[in-house]
Image (cartoon, rainbow, N blue to C red):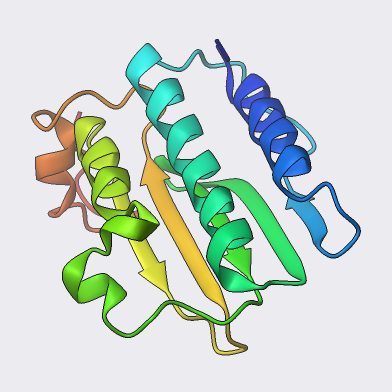
Length: 160
């Protein structure tokens, strides 16, 4: 499996290229030039990969998008994975009901397994954005995630 972030990014790109292989969709990636060589824990790499693939799969099945952007970037102590499309957007009911057809509940469950946060949004320009914020060695529910709500930004106390 993908051991590092760079491996994980490569696996996600392979998946995206499979999903968006026809010429109808522009599949773009935004990555760092230099990757940290930190190893990912097995649950993190497995769940981040599966969430990313599910998000891209949803785009192909439901959105009618012409453009999909996959981003993986650091934000503070976390990394963020984003899949953004310019399609029809989520149905209004999807988030309330965690629409089973979109796999939202299973994506949320996977995120919780690794102490990550997942959000779905509608960018101003339309379409859908899925954003997953995770730690490279995210554990299960206990640990830093519960305390992370108290994390007060760069000047705040850093929980270890």
